[in-house]
Length: 618
Image (cartoon, rainbow, N blue to C red; front, side):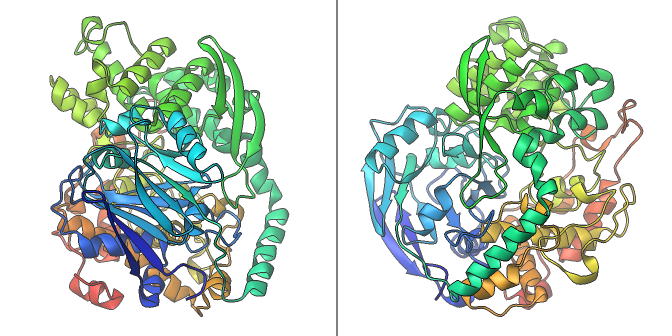
């Protein structure tokens, strides 16, 4: 088989045993490697009833077919497991440089089962592997853990958890490259439950493509198109995802004051300007990109804050939202420090900010008091926000309550606080509001990974045109009316299939911003794997992966037809102020059209005919 290793490594942490498995090419072709291979394996090995933090949950680290082949923006990887946050299919996508390094080490994926009786890490160097004692690094933060593993293998790449992961906090992220995070679904807690502190890999293997000259020419074509579209890329290079921060805080995109406010009214233009991408860029030392990246939307920064000097990653949009408008904070010192603590300790920035916003509302309503917390908090108090992030990271006091997110905190705090815990099935919501982009409600409620803005769907295209990863005939570029609710199921489904294709190949989701409806996936599959594929076959593979994720959830007892939102998320009742103040999202119609299009029965199971057509084994 060309383009991949053709095998995965199984690690049983209970007895420190290994098994190499050769994967048939048919499986790769059906599931496109990477993330798709992950859902195939977990459906094959798990029955859905597993305790997410128990020994029977399987934790996978997946590389994509484009990893290691210099495909621009094709260097990302995925981690997968049953989510302890939601009880559903769990995944998180990550950049950095770990993915291609793992691919070149001799395996396309790693699967961990069982639980070690002591802290350990996996060492994998050019196909040779061992379980090593992690006692000396247990209790260290993510930066320290990465330092430790990189001293063992200086040219390698490390994947680690911090103390929140060790403590099985659901807010725990999995970190690499000193600040790149696989932050969602609570999978850092899964690593911690297995006492797996980290993975260090080194790979020098050259994986041969089917046609190296065709691959070189195709990559060159991609670069030429990138140069032609450089104006589309320029804002990403200058400001990263913070390019949208100021506008999003005012136009209804960013949720404000724990989803109870409106940016123009409660945050204001002056505060939005203080945290704009241009203001944040003043601290930038240099741009950087993840593996195989030409976009370089990352930035290393240095800032002399009131808490002391800080040097690390530039804020991302989700961090400006969660530590900004969601908490009514416009102090960049506080936001940058909160962001840095999350990166250093290994915390999901979205959920950390969401948990603090929930606590601020509890405080404002008198449900939590200064005595409960140990100090005064409140919306707009940046210093208190930083202290709260530190409390969560250490798991001390109120931090131990908030460390599993707002939904679980509300069950401990009680007093009807669940009414303003903003989540779907336990997953704290991202920093994009369906009242501005209604089909995000479909994605948040009905995708197999609930409450996720990166799960695929047409929300970000509403008011514009459908953007897919590659040219898909009449559907590419189709106009999408923002507040029409019927008839969107087909486009929502196609967009979700497209996302599965990107996640399964290792592509960055930002690629569609520079190569909309135009990335040469078929040429790349031919050059790398030797496969002759049609657009329909590729889209069918995306559908297969999406339906297989739905099947995983059905077996776990999750029914997307029955998932309901917090009313604030969909404007029920309407917000009453700001650009989206009169909007109530008809999420029922949106969800119904999508689930019927994908072929999900009313009990949550994919229809038998759909499973047969896609060749999914039950």
